[in-house]
Image 1: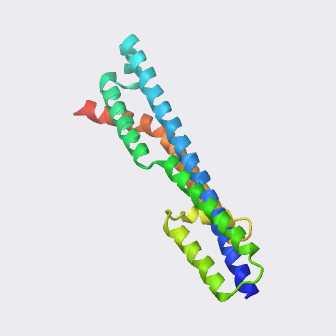
Image 2 (image 1 turned 90 degrees about the vertical axis):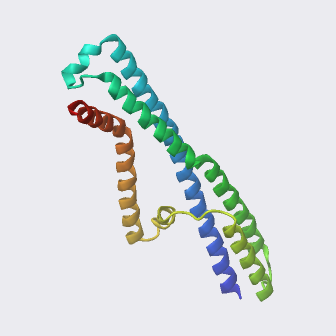
Image 3 (image 1 turned 60 degrees about the vertical axis):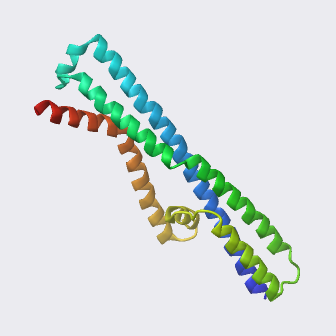
Length: 190
């Protein structure tokens, strides 16, 4: 019974740590989207002022009609804002925090049980399953982050995930420039 108690305590602890990673990831995504919204808005603002003040200077970089570029940029900003809001990263992070807080209470309860009977194990396991059923699941990346320090293969998977994650973040920052420039050139040629 002691081995089973230890196994359950370890499972609760691991799940709690993974949910902490999930919360951190979701908070990062919330902050990143806020920064991107401000970044894209500043891009449009600066571009609008430049287009108003020096409309002819855009011909140097191949843009005949900066108004079209501004229109496309505004549509991209609007779409990104809706996309960003629809994911509600902050609320989801708060729910992850509530989940790992409940798991912490269950962890303390399971570790405090002096004599652990099969009924107590079943009760703890049922509470554990109930907690998990009340919240969204974490992503594989959160699991990999937790396991990366223990296993070289998991560490490599996590490094690959980080590479993809930061590559996508760089693309998010360059995206408004690329899309607006490409669309302006395509629409100019029609």
